[in-house]
Image 1 (cartoon, rainbow, N blue to C red):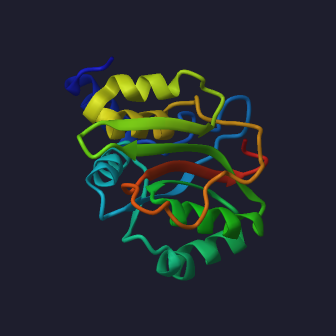
Image 2: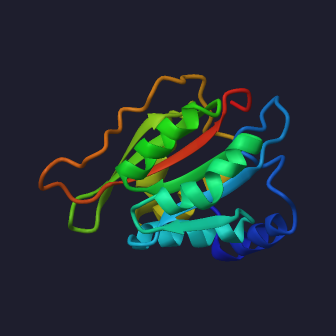
Image 3: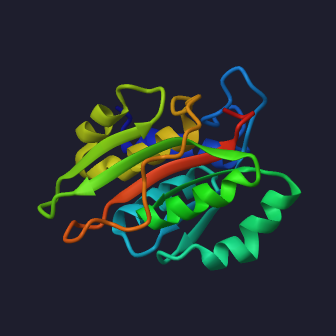
Length: 193
């Protein structure tokens, strides 16, 4: 596990270079950059994730639950011009909507994980889609630092791709009475994964 000094040193080095070779999709393929990292401003863990992604050089975009303005003002025109990869840490509805909008532009969810708080400070991590079988255990071991570890893995690490392009199992609404779960995800062109 890296210490704070090593993390900051790596973040500084990465911020000076585009996310190319360190992209989660770069294994044996052309380098792919992340067009945006979307985070839900209402959640402290999402804000921590975004701060780390920003340190790693990823362009961050904030939402407050609703992705409509981001879609209309930015993503739609970018994807019409050239489909590009995005990542995020949001609630379920944002992932659901972005996944469906992405289909029309040749993009698919290539990584997804659920992060469910228990109300007592513990977060359970369920990996929905990835090729890295040990990722959930790594996030569990990180404890309260899981958003930082997740950002490092998603933004700088080549470990989260998949070839499974079926729709994710996320739906629009949360179940009644459950605490707000966060979902980390990467949407990318099928050819990038």
